[in-house]
Image 1 (cartoon, rainbow, N blue to C red):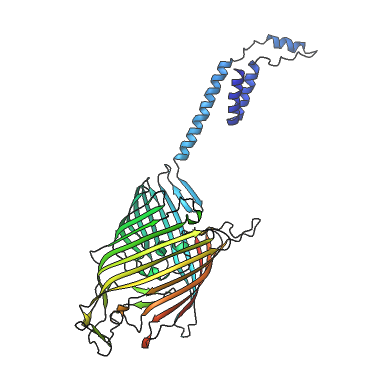
Image 2 (cartoon, one colour; image 1 turned 90 degrees about the horizontal axis):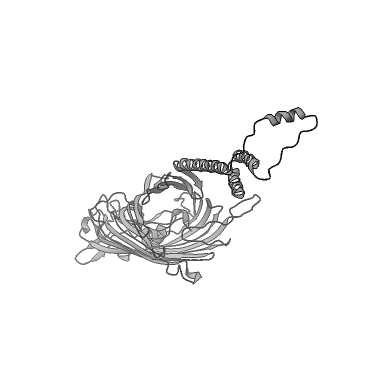
Length: 509
């Protein structure tokens, strides 16, 4: 019983030292072998007689002390439970590497806040006519709010503050299981590997030509999910139907686009380590589009320097020297077309095909894709009734190599040793990048649907540069881009080459 008593006292001592000390003294008075009272010193006889006259109090029993200890232990437990309850009734606020978050007391709802911005420099070289301004610009400013309400309802909102204000992401998800999430709202469409890649994780500062042939953000209803331990993902939905390279908030007709994508990591769980991060996929879209004079539903293609090098004929481009005979199917460059507005509009079925893939191993990465975008177009004015299916194609291949040894990925790179000049020195991560890309317009677009003196038939771009990840929050990038054209100038000449140097400071958390 004595050993048990001391163990209980030790437990309480750790929780409440003053209480344990008092009980230890009480226990010492009643245990066998307790210290006897010292005899009075000579000359203290009166004190001894007085002491012997005091009544004797019996020490408490072991059972009563055990009961008191149990009561004290229970009081301490109740106190701890009350403190835990108070904590659970309060929301939790955290700030870390993944942004700021607010989590409800029941842990079933959360709100996360993230942010990133791009401050760019764009400098055109060999621009002898000084038509292209060298400039600093705020390319992107995007706060992000995302989270969940309850266990199964997710949401995301991402506005764009640079240039014209716009809401890019604004969707809700019902996610009872990871294998199937129902998404409703505005988001990136599931076509275009480079388009799907986050703007924060871009290897080259500007998009390649393949992204010119994909829609950007669109509204729709879609089903997406991950299967087989996230080695296979799918995404399929019905969308309003944005034109290539554009974002759509409302539709202009009753027809919608069907868009789907399947992507697989076939060796993710295998024993062949170099192939674990090999991914292959395919995306496609199909729809019907009908434009008019005010909204022709036609795309325009731009270079990395954001200069338009191809567009379809419009009201301002009357093309008075080009005529087309519907009967003979012959184009005449000498007969004038009086009253022909020149306007081209989408008028019929359209589709896109997009094989894609990437591979990452060690410090090396490679990803690429090919895309075909086809649409039926019709001509207005004197050529009314002329209809043609036109197909533009593009491809791109991007390679990156990390000199500091980190492993790149499709979702970006995190430096092992952030830049630091303190006791723990670090350089960050340095990555070399290169890309080749080409876009080719259907030859049948010229000269009736597009003006060969203003729109190029083909653009080929080579880009190279580096990304310096100073930390996971700060990245500095610099690229050089050279683009050559076929056609696009008067007298059947080629459009002048574009040579441009880019720089970017990215801040993200």
